[in-house]
Length: 497
Image 1: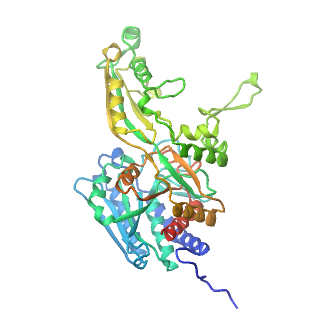
Image 2: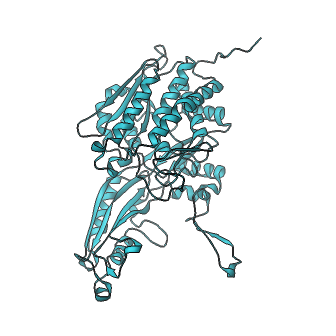
Image 3: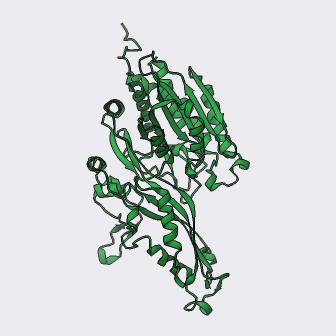
């Protein structure tokens, strides 16, 4: 006699094999085609497209996602596109609880993602492009698929996996924004407007983070904050022949170097203001050591380091550019708990082919300062402005125009049920226990939600594993990992007490 297609499972659990099969079918038949269409749309975040409302790209991806969610006909699901005046829109859905009274039916799961994207960037492989979806060897290339256009689709697929097995579940709501890559400045007004409808949030699932590898489920335990803005040094009102002026008129670039030296030790990269640093909590240090034991030198080897051939003096060998440290523990801490300055853009420079012998009137840099999770971003922005602008060399005109800041996030203590659910889900779908890792990026929502729902557990996870390269060239979504992550999310929701 044939075995039954459905095995009876204990309350609060899923049949893992069936769950993975269900979400795999959803990904292959429906989600992948939708994400390919999504990648084609240059739905850049408002910080990178001031005319976003006129261009309509954000509206396009929001409408497509809403249409897809409605087409899934999830039992008990209600969907709305919500618009506050003058703000980017959000997609909001809610699914009624199916647990009986007294079974934790009053608790709510909040699922989060975003649909806005980073700009194109250069350096894409010749056969790839930011708005050209290419599916190759299990990877879907294109801007925004992994960061994190997939989130709304995976969230609904996880809910459907619960429904398919008639597994009792708590109330589930979803909040999908379109302003995340601009710092989520529109999000808090929506959270405030929806607070009563969000309910008693006991679990937040944020599918906008990374993974240490593709071999297990990874829980993000911390996120760095960010302070960003444009630093401009002006010494002249117009360009002057360098042969006539250099040596008398100071270079705006040299003044820029002097000003930045107030902020950063260029030899080591260490940020000089003590207030930009914080002590690493003991639990996070222990987790970094455990994660370093799992990942080893892949912590730094996963990046696309520049290479060059050495001359005959060293035997013609290939030389690789080096990281700031090759100690895996310190490498993890450097990218998660250490403040770091990056110059992400420049203005005032002609292209190389157009650069004549002219002393330029000004130099402007876009600064991105990643802050440790426990450092207040608003205070850091104010200190940056004073530090960079005061007492300018040669009385040059030095201005720092902030793009704002976002304070980082440190996860709350993990409750036993949550840790057990994460480990069980990771073992079921990956054959390995859950890994804990801090991320160097910033998700402003998490700090807001931790403050608004201090008792909630935070499942911050995502598909941005090695070489996935969010924001850069050749960004890809690792589809096999995304399928398993989707199934793991369903299992965690099923196990929520």
